[in-house]
Image 1: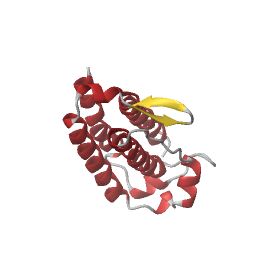
Image 2 (image 1 turned 60 degrees about the vertical axis):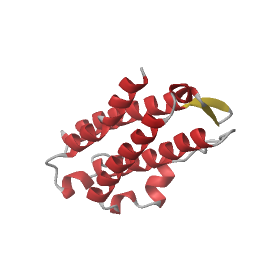
Image 3 (image 1 turned 120 degrees about the vertical axis):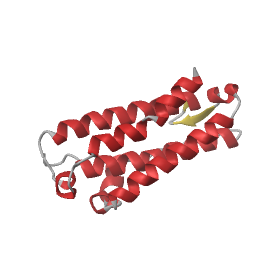
Image 4 (image 1 turned 30 degrees about the vertical axis):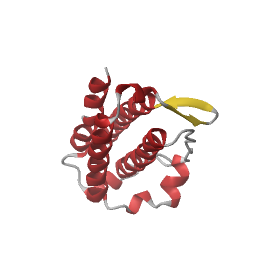
Length: 151
C-alpha cells in the first residue's frame, strides 16, 4: 500500500512538468482573472508547499512529539514575490524535493508511515501528508490546464 502511494507521489513531477510544457514565460505569467493565481504562481506555490510538507514529514520521523506549523499560501504568494521566481529553477527544486523525500520514505519502517504530528490540534500521519501531496499536485495541474485554455 505504501509503495503504491509512493509511486503516485513520484509521478507528481511528470504531471507538473507536462502541464507547463510548451508554455512561454509570458503565458505562464498572464493573469487571466484579477485576484487569481497565474500558472507561474501555481507552480511556485507547489514547490513551496512541497518544502513545507517535506519538513513536516521529516519532523514526524525525527521527533517524538512533532508540531506541524501552518502557512498562509496567499501571504506566501504575495510576500515571497512568486511572480518573480525563476520558474525552471523552482521546477528543478520540486523534482529534487520529491526524489529526496521519496528516498527517505523508502528507508523508514512501514509502521512509521502511520506516525503522526500535530497540526492545528489534530494528529496527521505521514501517510496522510503524502496523500495530500499527491492530491495537491493533481488539483493544481487541473487548475493549470484550465488556465492554459485561456492564455
